[in-house]
Image 1 (cartoon, rainbow, N blue to C red):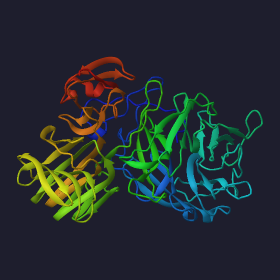
Image 2 (image 1 turned 135 degrees about the vertical axis):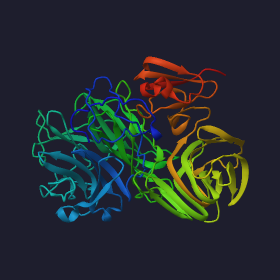
Image 3 (image 1 turned 180 degrees about the horizontal axis):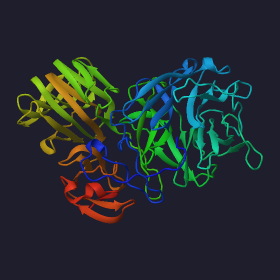
Length: 591
């Protein structure tokens, strides 16, 4: 959570941003003071570029804060009630490499708690570290439980119960005492936000952080339920002079679970209007909700941390942690968050990938495989209209390596789907598999196929499939045998390395943006309308199909100087617009 005023950093100089990772801090937005980003600050990321989930294990309800340049994530242990008896934490200095801190709080250290240890909320005050938590999931005032507070001398704990009883132990204004968040305003006043069962409250925290104060009218609690759709998961942040109150709505096991927010010019509201910022994506994950949000100190870079359920999981508690970039438009409106699928393996692991055959390892910033026969590694995704890309290096062997897409029935000896690969014999090819029997759809010569990293990309829209190598379309076929499925990597009788994997939706005839010149490092595809770039200083080339135009603006909200492109541009660096693009508009101009 943010404590204090958000500040912006200065824009970096132009250059190539691989996979959306900009070379410098964000460009300042109107109304926010400029300040240099601190040395060692994380790069301006589009998402968890080393892959979501970003840590291993079943977790939910993440809250996030920054202590002395280190990011701390405190989640719920996602398990049945009786097994939710402890809390872990994770720390990182770069939002890429994470250290696990086990059992920072245990019910053994809280005399009144026995289960359902939920939604930790961290905050530091006067050299002490406080962790607010829910316990026991009480359903009425005749039960013992509610919101507690623990304290430690270090961020990683161990935390111990600070008051020996719940801080909030009863229903007030209909709000179940769960899912708390703590926010400290610029003037030092601390606020406690919480609530379940469709109602939300705010209360003042005294300076000691272990007792509640009173509002000017003498009341302890004030109801602030922002919407009739409010369910749980209160979260408060401040950007500039605006307060953003966030919450989750819908059923946590259902298809409608999501995150919304509303704004106010006061920390106690009134808040409005309600806007949706995170929804489930049937191509990526379900159950997305209960978020935290963090501002990178010294910048206007913001990341939404949340939990989600992998598509193949049916257990309600099979939830993992993810984060993606959240952007604000010129009016301060949060733009809907996209669940990006990306992995550059910089964290040295392959979380989220499932393997079959071969020896797969994430090491030295790449994903390598040694395959004497057939080997594959799949993501738990379900894309139909898809643009998929990876940097593929065929290191040796007599076989091939490349990309799998629209994969279904991925059994040990059965696979339905497509495979675009690079062959040691010196070709790029596209194949289709039906029940594990492969048929070749197209191929073309590829000099220097072995020992060189090639950017291999497939774009599949309906029954049209294109294969690109190093920014050039090499194959185009029409085939409708496989319409939707998983994405992944494959190697056969070869040693290969994969890096910079991106999977994104590919709307028909849409504008595409890339982080490298010559249409490499896919950032995203965009339909008609006004958009923000994935990150400042990120866009280095454009694909503009016939009948479309993209207008680049050097100001937020489609303002300032502009440049219109009605054809693809292989390198915006040449005219400086990679550095300047702050917003853009996609339009149809023909047909």
